[in-house]
Image (spheres, helix red, strand yellow):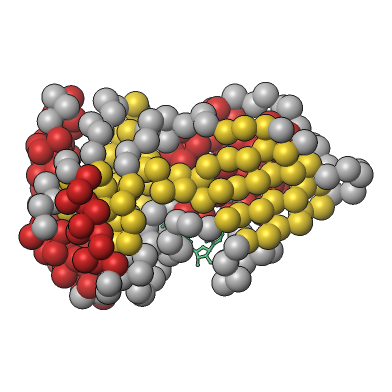
Length: 303
Ligand code: ATP
């Protein structure tokens, strides 16, 4: 049996860092949004009884072994269910890699849903989310999609009103940023400015965005996009500020960096404007896309 799934990228409409766990994980408060830009993941159950993972990715520089998030997802599923999983997994990458768009987490989430289908295990979303969390902090969100407030390390998810329909331009500068480096730089900056000030500013911005979301006020939402990692990421990648400026000059209601960057997104009401802006950006930045917000997931086919 084969399951074909979309693995959708996410953007962070807000990203506040509110603390640190003893194990070093940062505690977040983030409004996350899934978008239509997606990898295609195919999970095929193989005959035979010996456990086996046959992994293929369309990009040669994405690892095809136990370093891949999809491999880790298979291991977590096999361990939990006790099934000697024997599968072929094909990951057709579209989501830019190392971009702050949770591409790896989205693929892992898709594989968990795919395994649940091809092995007919009927695991609850909660169980899948717990398995996903062992692979990565963004996997529980990627399993659910839509618009959610994420707390903790990303695992405490609350449903929010959907982001009103709009056109979202995504633009990734040529360099990739390491999530770990950006968080380390944030920590240094946090000590310098003072935790209280940073936390108060973040909380205020997020509150305003949540209010605008409640009112379905797209302009209000776009005005209150925020990301605590923007300053440390911008210090390492000058393209971020340039892309944000270009998007604003071309009619974006609001722009922000996603996750730990360096991808920048801009929110547009007009599809034509979004496409024109993307065309301008594309001449310099190959990885530029026009995408839309998506609702909670569920779209997949089994054959
Ligand atoms: P996040 O937004 O969660 O920080 P990201 O978008 O910045 O994630 P990814 O694209 O998920 O980053 O990948 C980061 C690293 O993980 C890359 O160096 C890549 O080699 C490795 N990786 C492992 N599995 C995958 C996968 N399925 N897809 C893409 N990259 C993967």
